[in-house]
Image 1 (cartoon, rainbow, N blue to C red):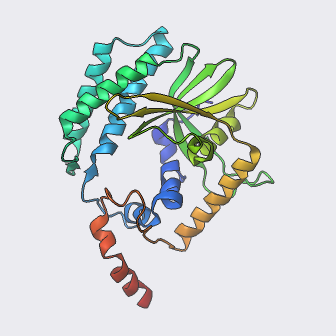
Image 2: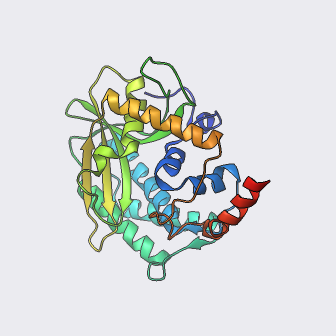
Image 3: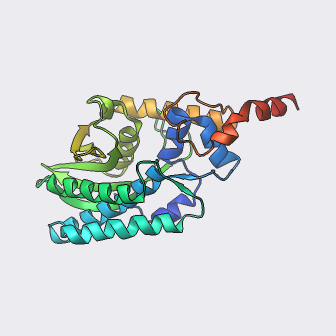
Amino acid sequence: MNSAMNFAELRALPHWSFSSLNQILNICSQQYAFRKVDQIEPDFVPSNLIFGSAFHASVSHLYRSLQKNGSPVVEKELSEHFTETLKNRVKAESLPVRFDEEKDLAWHLDKGRQMLQSLVASLDPQDDVIGVDIPFIAEILDEEGRSVSKPLIGEFDAVVENQGRLVVVDFKTAAAKWPAQKCHSDLQATAYLMGLRQSVSSQQSLFRYDVVTKTKEPAVTRYLTDRTDSDFLRFTRLVQMADRVVQEGLFYPHEGCMACGGCPYAGHCAKWHQQSYLQLSA
């Protein structure tokens, strides 16, 4: 399960990340092009990205204590870890961090601490933490077992053993609870279980989303899901489509998608049709 290379070394190789695939396939292929192809600097950094990274860092700190000591760090230490991490990440940004009018830095600090308290209170005592922030590499294979694209490289937030099964755990922050069926179609579970099963085939394995809401009273909901060989083949076909999009430059704005409202490339996107016309006419 552990790669011989660390995450930084793996990322130096030609590869797909799940976030890039998701951006092309589900969010906005033009946003991917602005970021990865044209390498345009965004106008700002959305606060939810900074918040999410700081929250994940503190959850990793929590799960490392579970792995090492079998018990969580004390609430004060975890709260201080999150506060320091979020403040430092906001301060370190070279671009402006955009907060909502009613949800400033103080709101995010308070909400993150509440969410961590909820997560600690809801820990599953049957989880035996095997590892935290584990890098992995997975081949994109067709039905004949042939590699058909760049490998997928990623990092498991945590891997636990629960009732004799290996479970990849991914921590999510969300505005509200997920629809019950979302976990069964979400591509990240497919991608990550594919990565796990290519390296560990002798034990039953599942994927779990631990979703912590930013609601007035934060709640933790766990969504357990599985995938089949057919799901993995479907994922391979989608990766092949993403390859074609990049190779042929078939990028376009996904008008009205959920990411439009807070997109840091909105100014460039507003002029996309003019620039695209000039390029096509050249």
